[in-house]
Image (tube, rainbow, N blue to C red; front, side, top):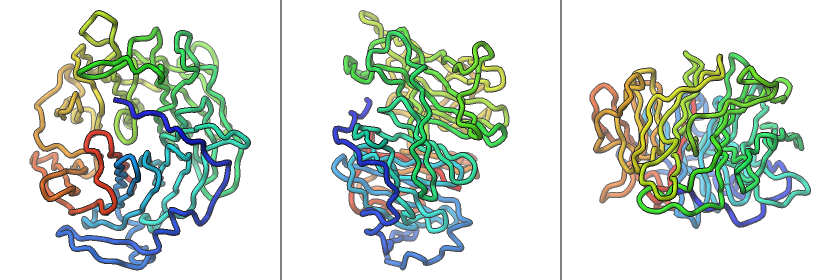
Length: 412
């Protein structure tokens, strides 16, 4: 089920060094693996934190949100950041972490050393445009240059993470497909490839206004439109040719309704220079089977795509955690499955796989779990298949919805 679009207008373009969000976080509450909570000054352990792998979780009850920064070496909650927007998500790119307010359009940039605090707050709207921007992710290129992917706009917004105001946008309206009635290309997710200095962005190209889906998976009706991958030369901000046909053209996906949301759904395998895309698919009226559903690999060198896993099941393919070419995990319906990407079928169902999972690049899937005692941060060990707690009580301000109220991002 897709979250509804925000209903409020965003603020004008601004860079606010001290935002309402950051001003609330002069102290942080941290807890060890046993859950004992204490308050520390904001500069405590800054040198150590710069070398620690961290995971950013954002939970929402859809009235307000809370960002939780978790250190992995050793396991600890480094801090919590209250967010007033009830539709906020986590994002990370090139060692930068962000909390994005989808309703207001604000982008909270976490401090690169003390990640439990906001260093600057930017806006994703355009002057004098007061319309909804709905930021979904930030893709960072070289230096302080970054691209805001805005679900309610047909332009990428170029921002400077140092706070220098920018009004530059990259127009994507040429990728509007005939047969898509909402007038939006639906910029969903993206990655940066340092080897080519290119950013790749995922366009859903769905009808955001179609809520015709029914039980059990609630996907919309099929359109004669597929998702697409667009390439940006980050040195010139120009759209590049990806498929070898016409300059400035995109790679059209095999799947429909690509679910490249947050940390999962779109992955980049740098060893093979492939994008892995999870597609939710669609339904044809009068049919029970689903179309365009599964996981495909997009070869960025050739501009071609192929199915790795395809299904017509009514259990939607919602997320992908990519580890390597033979080990990954797929959420289908409400369940998680082990998956060898060289095989056309899913493997064993996993009973206690973490929610909002990320791969820590060190043999563990880190995420969240909820039991009678509340939420906890947990790690699923790839070698043993066992799940163990890392820290308790990550959320103090909200009790997030387990199905739709959690997002995560790995920060190195």
